[in-house]
Length: 285
Image (cartoon, rainbow, N blue to C red; front, top):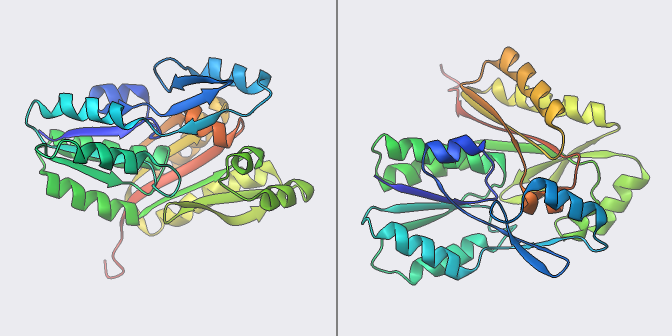
């Protein structure tokens, strides 16, 4: 059976990682001179305590090549192929590090995938790969499916402030300043692996409503929907939106996941995102 590896930038409910035996490589979070491994020695409560009290914003980095080498070496002992799916190479060096580790074990069958995504949409791809692997799909079948899904997956999100993205270099300081001065709430999206502004609205409530509208619009052209709701410290809001979308759109699957410390470093508290993948509906059907 094909073995599935990802990084902790992919967000799913923890029980799904466990149920499908998905190996998760932890991203690195640096706080006040200390190095933490997401999900191993840094939980969310500790992270947010540091975020509130630390004079400097935490920083993040990709896992070291040695960690990938260790995991690939262990998994390849079974002689089963590995598909390793990672967050967008435009936002992180994780994919490049995974490729470097793969090249250190040329005898192993390891395919490294740049998801061009992050957070819950990356999780949707990882979950599909794991389910296909369990059903007996080949590496080629999984890779082809992932390429198709990448092209048809959307992810829209809003932040309480652009301050964290700007400090982390993911958007310009000018964009953050303009948004704060005008009290605008940009709706952001992932496009070709990068974060872009999709549109701007005036209030948080309107922005949350618009996120749902965008998923409804997507649903008009797609079926068999899989929806992921991402949040940072907004569990009630995320659950309420998931409930509403479940009742209205009746997706095949919908889940809620709180972003881990590495993504939350750049998002900050108060973030909310909606990802969706669906099978395109033919115009002739």
